[in-house]
Image (cartoon, rainbow, N blue to C red; front, side, top):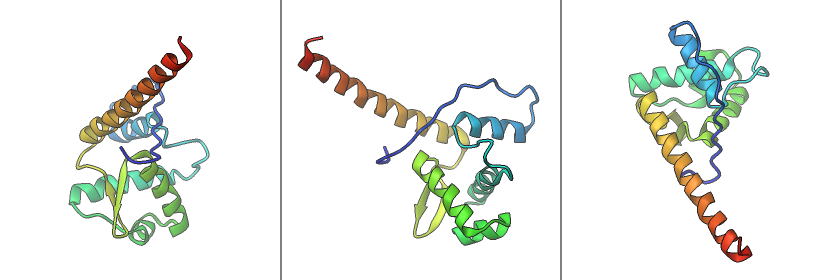
Length: 134
């Protein structure tokens, strides 16, 4: 698991329409990525661009992403940091890509991260219970 990783899961109803954009937005909202504060959907657009670059097999720099999305580099870096913290994106030599090659495997990896975190919490809870004789 990534140190200091923050995984947010929000259980919301799936979209009625079976449209890939709606489903991508639902996926991102369910992972706590997108919010109402993101008025121009810049994080969503960045997420989609990273999916496209994954399909092409080529990581991208923050400057490349900013240029493609017509966003400032600062905005892109801000959103990349959120994606890095969540474990969705990885960085290698200033190049950014999805952690794995497809979304289904990405969800499997996040599930493993959550399980490891829950196992750690359970172990600490057990130790506290023992110490407090609960």
